[in-house]
Length: 80
Image: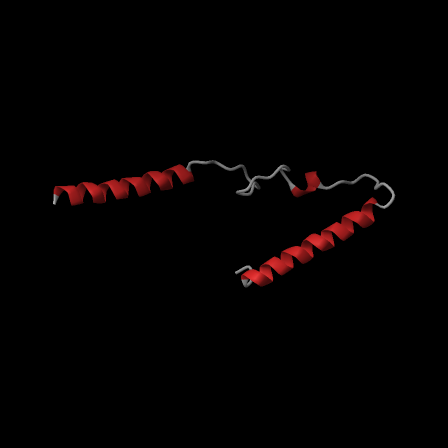
């Protein structure tokens, strides 16, 4: 009986400590869980001139990455 009680309290303490540890990591406003190198979206945007062909390459790469992500979501059954 005493061993069961100690085990139950041990499990409860473990869960509480785990939850406290996960909640104790402060995040700055606007920062995602995986990290974000830019504090705001606007600070990541490039407003200068493109080199010849750079814009076309960027748009093609964005289309390719979007298509790849769409296929991955379709295979996994959607995003919800």
